[in-house]
Amino acid sequence: MGKPLHNKRKIVNDPVYGFVTISSEVLFDLIEHPWFQRLRRIRQLGMTGFVYPGALHTRFHHALGAMHLMQEAIETLRMKGFGISDKEAEATLIAILLHDIGHGPYSHALEHSIVGGMSHEELSVLMMQRLNEQFEGKLELAIRIFTNKYHKHFLHQLVSSQLDMDRLDYLKRDSFYTGVSEGVINTDRIIKMLTVCNDEIMVEDKGIYSIEKFIVARRLMYWQVYYHKTVVSAENMMINLLRRAKYLAEKGTGLFATPAFLHFLQHRFTREDFENDLSLLGKFALLDDYDVYTSIKIWADHPDKVLSILSSSLVNRHLFKIELRDKPFDESEPDKIRESIRETWPGLDDDQAAYLIGMGSITNNAYIPEHDKINILQRDGTVCDIAESSDQLNVSVLTSTVTKYFMCYPKNLIQS
Image 1 (cartoon, rainbow, N blue to C red):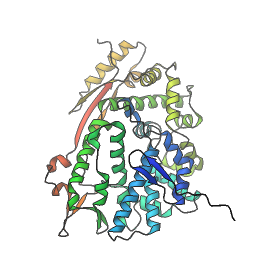
Image 2: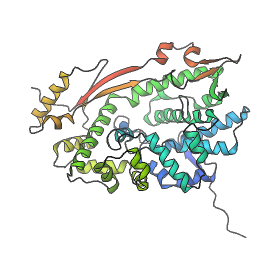
Image 3: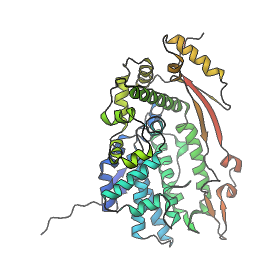
Image 4: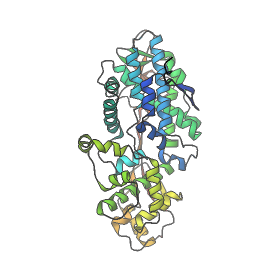
């Protein structure tokens, strides 16, 4: 008898959904790939663990969860008679599995400060294209679905839209790990209500209340978790810390860092660099949270005062005070804070003091009808936007965009 084939159809015990099935060999091989395994070392919620101690789940967890929900969605649509071939189903599962593979450590902070001019979505596409070469073209259809270049548009919507499997998983998973019950959504009910009309993903009208709950949960999770003022403060400290480290590295100042991390600190790379230098993606794929946090621990004792203050503050969770307002801050206000910073740490100039102030805005728009709408399919065959169908929620509440402005700075400054 020949040697038995290795079984690649595995099950994974997920704390949110129970058993998740890896349904094909190519999915198993992609999960086993070092670039995907790296997602185990990147937290889904970055700095949020400073506020919610349970929020330590990773992008690896999230990718498997989104894949599981995609399997459920495909099964539902097939049962309702919508044609999805085995090849299309596998490609859609690959697309959702790899949708976050381009995330870097502390991804949103890193996008601002280390890899300029490139979003994680663009990096995901480049990494999928490189994996497609390694997998001898098996990802071709998945890439077309991911980039919305396949003729069945509704498959792309399952991967990326205002009601995609990505959002369904991260809302439910982030709620589970943070313990914020306001974010709990009924993914089973939402998926069972999915349908297709005119090549668009829609929701049967009897599922409207589950969609209303989804939009409300998304809005609340943004204010309570993603835009929690302490999380915003910590993320801006990380952004300014990485900006300072990059400034010092480009200037030639000695910095401890892993080789891959140091490479990105010392250079400014563009999309063209990633496309032309085949080794650059591989170096990016060596970066994870551990590279950054290990460096920050060492930088806490760095002779550069700004880098030291920011690093030791993050390591010891001495987070900056943050003020939130409905209107932009007056230009004179950061000037006063800078003056207090210089008095507290004599020797810092204005440019250095600026790293110890974080300013910006946060925008909460749980549902944007101008974008890819969430459409409700009525029993008489008519189609309408959720914001028009809802009888529980005021349309202006569903669709309004709320912007708040923030300024964060060290606590206990000497006041002049």
